[in-house]
Image 1 (cartoon, rainbow, N blue to C red):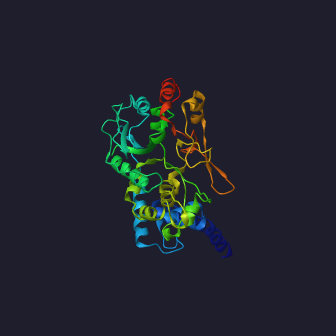
Image 2: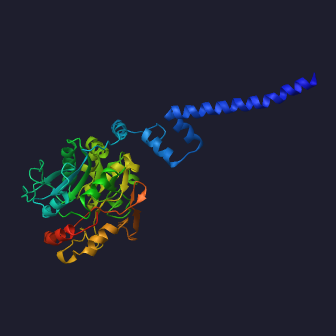
Length: 381
């Protein structure tokens, strides 16, 4: 009787192993079938930064250090739903070029060369804040939108940007949006720019923390509770933006209003805050930090350390300068505190390091002829 009992005991080992393996398989199948269960279970045992970001976006009640207001919850719900819609590229997909200018565009002839031969792949919108432009290119004729006066450093800059985006979004073929000034030029040919923007997975919005007086020194506590100082960011006004983000900007009124009234020149304490440098970097970093590149594709030279970037004159325009623009693959950001720290952001395009810049500014009108000559004779893409 002992031998049969011993045989029965030894047979239980494989049976339990089979049962355990079966349970493990069922657990894994459940993870794949139910994404929320998958995320919750994996993050419970393997907590990562990605899990924390997911929880933030998911708006779980324990993900925030404070209770959100109704307006904040409504805003985050809208953003979360919009981010679910992926951009669909088609044969009719276009890049929208948004020009913010006081009047006529001094480099319109250069842009004509840039656009020529690529009809159907671009749209043009012009916000002329002072006078109706006189055009020299058929591509720009009749492309003015309803415009309002714009003052340097004032919130009217942001309102003009939003006005341009709104008009461009009416065309469902516009899938990426580029903001340009009257002093901007292209430093790449159209096909390179078109593919660079349409096939990216991010918006090219410069975004960094500046602890100095021209960064976080502009923050005012009236922005609380929705915008905390730790969330305050700085970046270039000149962005490119994918359609998802453009729609999110259109839908935002909460953070737009906060910046309209609490980030402007002449704030309390004699501080000057410029929303065109802070609103979009702060807002999009808060709602979709992984969806922005943290650098701009428009080159600007701040080496002179003045309120405005360096201007390029006719004597500066050489083939070496243009090659320099297209060779840069890291974007520097200089803080305004006494340390003057240089923050370097490698220019990553869909996971690979690539040249940073598609456009450049700030060029005086007298450079036009030399720029057209160099652009026409350039063999680079």
